[in-house]
Length: 312
Image (cartoon, rainbow, N blue to C red; front, side, top):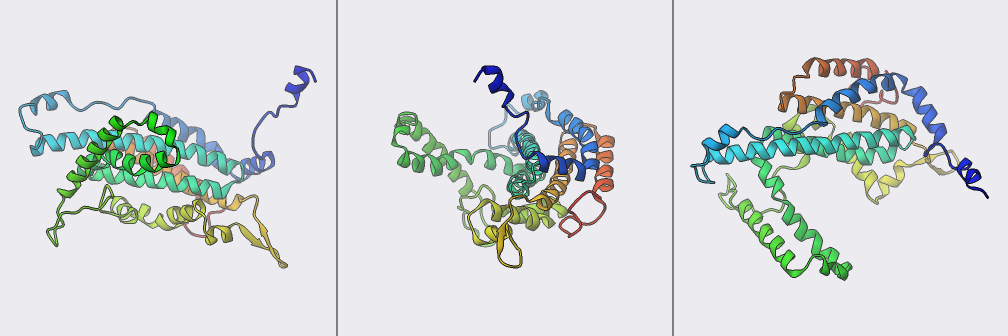
């Protein structure tokens, strides 16, 4: 076979072409809106995060690291970075969800939707509670100490990459991070709080504290995505269809894809609004226009209702 013949056999696209065509027909109104949405979130995320105010930093140099003004300054700077980069990751999630939805892979889209939701809730929570920012950022060595020893036990060759000196540094950083957590005192029992989580608030509580609508979406987005992501009987049941004589596996999940697209679109607007307000980007009018377009596309039925299988 010649190289030209081999080239002619290479497909011009990857994915389920028939599902892609049905997606385009079903979500035509959303796809007409998408370029405007993409243009807005590109402006929001394709930029450099401004560093903390230099004059303010200079004014704090004579103070100790434990001074409340210094702590607040560092918390704000760390919060800004986390809000931006968690948002940037959530924007990536959105693109991946679109690809899955466009190929009729609704269950897969819900798995990614779960991650998008968690990142947005966390970003919004940290934006509202900057004192939690450094605790979140400094949790990395704790996570490494939970992860690397288990990994090296399975793959002993990794000890060459992560030698004793490296692991001692990680252990010291993890111990320091845990010690900071123990400085938090329970207001009821007055005892040190020593749990491993970076925050003492669960995700569903964080969501309700951050935004009432995000709190309502915890079940239909996060819990549903969790059951799709892990091996469990409910996840299996979700993918089976009773035909009258038995159960058939649902190879294409286009109705679930439409629901995931609806959720993802709403979350993306929440994310854009958060970034615009937190960083004072002055895209207020464009954000309002995108929310109006959302209502035109999907209607005003509440998210999580039965009326979200297609465009409004």
